[in-house]
Amino acid sequence: MPVLHIQHGKVALSYQDTGTATAVIVLVHGFPFSSDLWLPQIAALRDRYRVIAPDLRGFGRSEVTPGPYPMELFAADISELLDGLGIDEAVIGGLSMGGYVAFEFYRRHPDRVTAMVLADTRPDPDTPEARANREKMADLARASGSRAVTEQLLPKLLARATREHKPGVVSALREMMESAKPEAIEAALRGMPLRADSRPLLAELAVPVLIMNGAEDRITPAEETREWSLRIPRAQFEIIEDAGHVSNLEQPEAFNRVLLKFLARSVRPGADPGDE
Ligand code: MLT
Image (cartoon, rainbow, N blue to C red; front, side, top):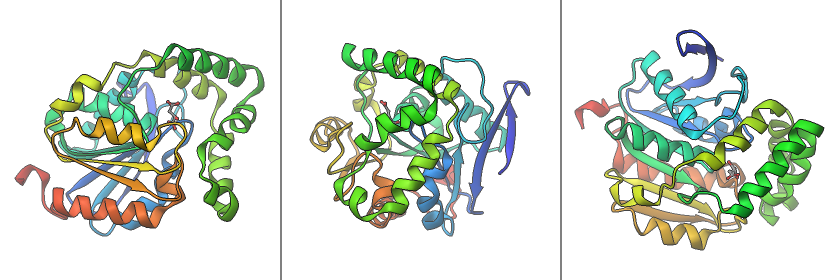
């Protein structure tokens, strides 16, 4: 997997870069995953788009640096990655924490975003209860490592259909989570509560936005997502049936079908987004 050195060579960021089209889709993984979260989407999109899926700082094969990792830091990393690759504009997509990063990226660089894909995420800041839970989980990561965090988190992530009928998805997710470095888990958990409230941004998103949510998502429930999606001027909201919080991996066919249709309407495959 290629690596780009950012921050004047201080941080090695690894990323997947597939496809040769000039239209670029950046896919940002959630917590505590890696760019491998997007393997089914990379396979589906690569013939028509160039797909860049970074391992966020500390995750996957990217270098770990001392935390916390606020979403601004992740967004700045992605911006530097795109600079390094000579990419001016892209569709920015993110799942859950990746969505928080996508909001932040748009806030900083609206001119670099041609469309957005927001999956199983929310614009709201953390509630006091969520903050307290993150503190506890960060302590758990430090004291007992990634496996303990996985044990606590994994059962909440998946739909019943996935748990009962898709053992390969469960084990792929487990492996990704267990191999996350405890320092990165802790740094992201201490960074997420620092994020800005993105609700005021919704009405300002001036690009087409696809919002997808697993029907059985218990972390970002579909009904809540439908409500906030109504505040986005050019939104398309879709529910992915038989999926929980990791809808792209749990139901890749349905997810990809919606995504490909949206992209076909919003981005011309092979066209230079700069020509739009
Ligand atoms: C994620 O999947 O990225 C997390 O659920 C985000 C969060 O904990 O808020």
